[in-house]
Amino acid sequence: MSKAAGGRKRKAKASGKRRDSPPEERTIERGEEGGPDEAVAFIAETVAELVKLAERHRLEVLSHLLGMAQLEAEERLRTRSKRKLS
Image (cartoon, rainbow, N blue to C red):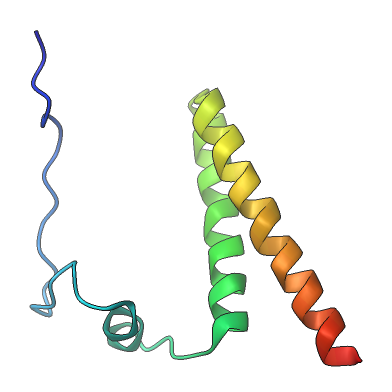
């Protein structure tokens, strides 16, 4: 029987901020202030890298789900840019 909570534990951040701090604090902490457009662009880029990682390790279901998240983020980027043009 395997442990339900097995796996690697993550180290706390050196800054002393807790993982459960509000997203605004985590964003400001990294110096990446910005609005929803910047957030969606960051998510799209990050998820694209995660898709590649999942595919490299043949994690098909995870790759598929991450790919769906990437498509959603990219679609939001497209629709926001169209609204700004009009």
